[in-house]
Image 1 (cartoon, rainbow over the protein chains, first blue to last red):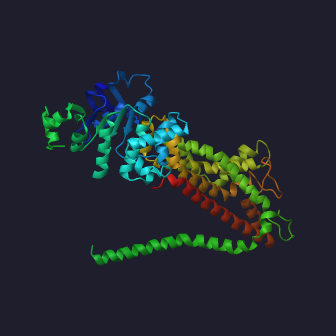
Image 2: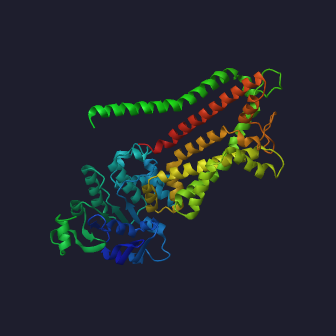
Image 3: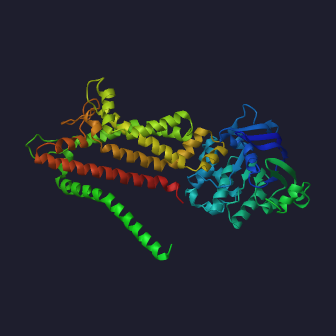
Length: 248
Length: 281
């Protein structure tokens, strides 16, 4: 479980997250929705501390995964990021072969055995529903894949290191409807084994894939609950206005 | 603006652009034409295999100068590539630090320093203390000329790598150094290599910094601690001599230099094409 308490985040002097507290359950899909600039991307990138690479970024409060605060001094960011995988909005395959893309995380984790590498690459590509499309051209450049395939390759790459949590920052926003539906099916299947947090601008997508939904607005968590309740019966006026499309 | 006027303006600018291209290309074409005309005829097998003959004797070649030039640019690369690349990596990784802007400024200034001044500097540092001209001093001078070019191209190409690649590597649990050396540098490598070869081609044609560093040598020498012949200095020496035979040799040397630089550019292209296999769709 990811347990967040009074989490604030700053870029320099600008405070972009205000006292976020939320419990994200295991093996479910949690969607983060809200208008642009509401802090949902900042929040999801705080979970695996990807914001660390931004100069002058600063966090306060706690984000605990299975009871351990990831912002505690002495946290090993490298092993944190191996436990918490991430898929980005813009697919970012490395300019290497399809095989090497998936093997990258395994190699930096110290896996040398060729047979073991091959088996894990195949398993990851299969889980990401890409194996049948690429099995005959694993040595070709990943850049030759279509946008949707590249995004599934990035998912396979993240799955290869066997994370517990998968963070997805608008994973389908640059894809066409067919590629999007493939990614959504994939998310649905993956939740049996992974806890998934997904940022999305697409309300239907949030309604389709998620079990829980959190609504962010101006850096604050406004409402959080079962997806059905958030969409059918929101408690807050702001949530209702947003999910019914009255603003945003 | 009426359609008629737009067409006229467009035609005028097209003509101007065409003329500018011609003006830029004419000197290049003339140089190549003369070098080929005068040089290609004087080039023969003996030119590659034989040593210079004394004045008055016909024939002979520049075997020592050809090998000398290769040794000199080899030394220059050995010195400048590691220094330049490491500086370039630093600049792209810490772009905003005070130290980085100082290095960047220094590289730009160094790029503008006349090559003869670089030669004098190398003379003071590598020749005067040991009181001997040497191949090492020549390679050092050429390396100094290469460094700023290598620094800036390395930096620029590394910064062109999409930031998403770094994020992707870090998100998989790569340390910063693994992300840089395993993903970012390989992605920029084809371009960096081109930059290095272009810098090499540039310094291969330098004469001034060699005049008082590697000097010249009439004899066969591959001793790095001794003066060494080079195509450029040999061409210079022959060209200002009063002998027709030497003038022919100078043309042949100039032709060979141009061909060497052309070959370097072609090698660069081919290497990039091979390396870029994975960068392209």
